[in-house]
Image (tube, rainbow, N blue to C red):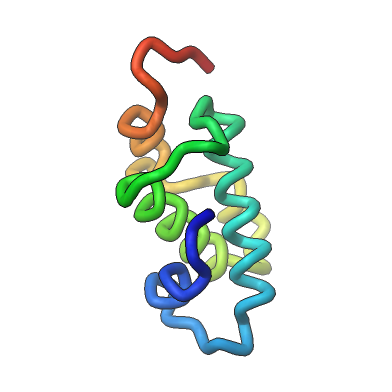
Length: 88
């Protein structure tokens, strides 16, 4: 599982927001799983993209419009993370 300290650095958040960051991390992991990236994926690249998406979600919390528009650079990260030969 991606460490909350790592996500906190991406988000520039304070430690008192750790519970919120954990929920953002879980939402990011779920988003990637729905996109075809297994929950069991490990490694620095996976951690980077999960932290990036979780921080983006943290920064855009309360903005309903933003949640429907995940940035293109995050969407394209799915291609880096999907297993070779995998499908959605």
